[in-house]
Length: 118
Image 1 (cartoon, one colour):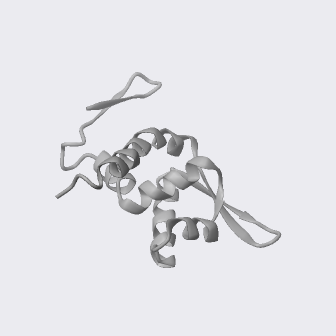
Image 2: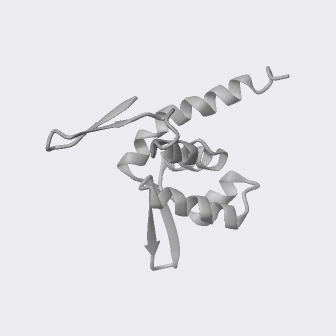
């Protein structure tokens, strides 16, 4: 259970095991396969859309666009339009950067144990 402290000493208690907790939607977003990989790529440096798609391999343009939109809406990444040449670059926000350590652990675990599954 996490507690969010507000300046006015108000306390909001979140419980991911509660059906109505908004933390469930955030957990669902950041633990999706593509979000884990997108945030991992952006952990290194800001990346343009085309490079991100190449790095991820089999992701479709629509799925990548939708997932980037969702991550931006939740404040985990930022989107910057570059005028010359016209391009869009994505980067982690401060809150997005806080997700990189636990998600990196998940990626390392998956790589280390993929041969051990039945």
